[in-house]
Length: 181
Image (cartoon, rainbow, N blue to C red; front, side):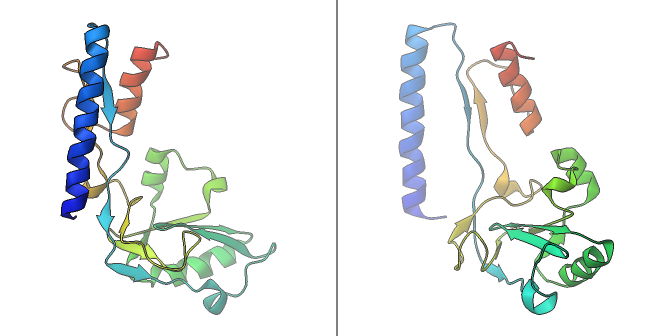
């Protein structure tokens, strides 16, 4: 959210335009697909999770956890430990558990992804985490319901994308062009 960032976006847009024009000049019936990587938002709040103080040290018979900047995953050996950790996490402001419906939609139902998966609210970041000891200025990886996390999908062929496009929609269009659909 700054002038230098917006200026850099204009430079990148120009690069995409030049490359697209050059490609289509050589391959007139070719197709250009462009997808931005992900959204970004300024970090305004820190979320501190202290499992060691609140739950005890992780160990092979209890639990293990991993915190990224915006996602926390916990693996529990016993249901009682899972309940204890969920109760603790449910009381932490700025985070929420990824619901079963979302886990199913995102294809992360296997417990190997974590018995418990929590994510921060938009603009929040776990600090410290395995991402780093200090907060970032900007962050991504928030729940896809936040508009800030939406991406841009463009095609040189009309009709490939219409309205809101999910990751599955983009995959299907790309698979169609690659002949793998």
